[in-house]
Length: 482
Image: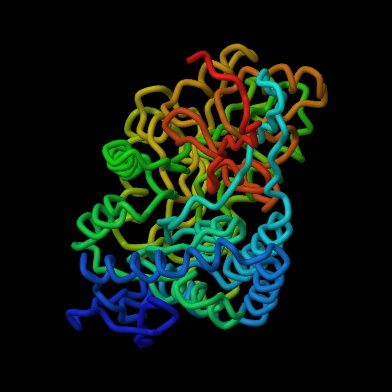
């Protein structure tokens, strides 16, 4: 068992109450980590530390900020093994998935570093003679990032990297499911040399989450909030931010469709489906959640995909497997319920279906229809539905028939046809002839509808983490009407 402390004002500290909570390894059932159980008072201490650091950090030159973030990226690369061990123990993910997390998170730090000199405004022509009018971007203040457990290094890093790059100070509220993994992100940034208080990381027990989050959002010093997680919790965060007039960036759930048209390269679509459906056990916001396949190629697609799905090894995440443990046994029980519901209502179990504790084999359901849980609900697991359609219009209707709108994919040899269809899909992201799962630090990442609003990444993130101000230099002797 690893016992950790939180980072407030550059120091490693216990909770003020001295209380702790345990995170259980979902595969072994043993204690993975013991972390501080922060209260509202700890949250206030983190806010005070971030606020105290903001004036100096916001005036720190972009070259210095860039150098520190680049150094942090190198340190993160060097700690990939340490990150992997923590991720496996806390979340049940596999070592390769953890390694990818560390690699992409380091890339996010490098991309954020490149943006430090890109806070560009503009000069706008004014109707007032002798006036220079400018639109100027500047750091907003203290930024709160709330990150989930499923891609913890990527999403924990993303929650604070852009804010820090643009001259803000940050508080990362770690997930209760991976406190040590998220804390290591803070340790990387501190080791890189960020001044005390620029990055703060706090942990809390699950039962204290609501009051800690509300205190963080309500604090007048906190000027920006970003949250990645479920749509259910995202609605609560959005309401809290609205109540306190805090801009929020919300990246929430998904029910990503992968549409396979009758002219698609079926083998290519199968390759993308295997990856998009089962990477990290399907526990990714962009995971392919609906395989919408034209009936002309559905038999071939299901036959080939079923063979691939049946060959994916599942088991102890410390072993050579593709699918490790789900985040907890309850998630596995949900997958069993999805399977039972679909089969009882007429779907066919095409592959998989075996569940052992928190390990669920890659599973494929064919002939899934409206009214089945697998058709409507986000599974966030490795049980995936094939929905057969008669034509492109039916595929589009089903793809859009969801509260979610994060990622999507279309397979067709006719790229113009696919582009036209993509323009009609209600999603923030669409990949043509590629999987629904994909992320790059420089891309505008986010969704529509119940998948949230706002965008992480590249220049798109600038609008989320800075204030745009109108500043003028005027003729002191200008004429006034009275």
